[in-house]
Amino acid sequence: MRKLLFLLLMTIANSLFSQSVDSLFVAANNLYKNEKFEEAIKQYKQIESQEVVSSELYYNLGNSYYKLNKVGPSIYYYEKALKLDPLNQDVKNNLVFAKRLALDNIEELPQTVLQKFNKKYLQKLSYNQWAVVVIVFSFLGGLLFLLYYFAYSSSRKRLFFVTSMASFILLAISIFITYNQYSFSKNNKEAIVFAEKTEVRNAPTLNSEEVFTLHEGTKVIVLDAVDNWKKIKLADGKLGWIIASEIKLIDSF
Image (tube, rainbow, N blue to C red):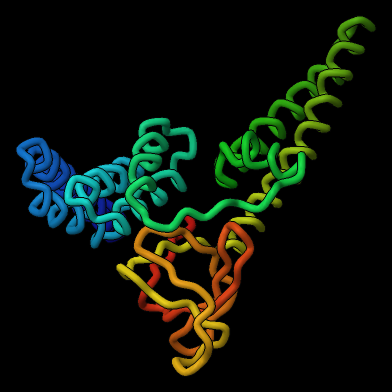
């Protein structure tokens, strides 16, 4: 009886929470439509503070900051939205416009054929989405093998055997890709510069030599951390140390 009562209370609480989030989201959208962007951001941030993870929420936050010409936050939230929905073309288009407002023009290092293929095709899906592909191929492979096992005619047996083996091969490939995408995501912690202007140094101390300067909105890869410093890498291969509070990590999901 107690378990039933607990489940009932949890269901009611979740329902009320969902309604609260939905009403906040609608209110924030209305504020955005009325060009009250700062008020809309407060509402969206209130939803975010409740640990709600949503590509639409981050996309709308990015749009709101973009309307206020706040380069760092707009790029940051567009990037977060893409982490959840890598195929969202609206987010990609708006991110291109936001990056045009950034002052730093950093050219990427030349990539190998495999790196280009990985970025252009494999990274279209997050590692969570690739995990779904793994589940699909494992289920399909198992089903086709069962059909092969119980089939009576030799022609059907050959068909189900070949297709089940193909499914298992694709399963192995998708597992490999999922693992690689997961490792890449964990080992390449991306962050956005939030400081309007900041100096990057060759060591994690204020009296060390300044090696280059970065501006708001630039994406960096975080490699290491010492006290209140982060070691970063740029797309062109440059390395340096930056004060941790001047960048914001793009969370992985």
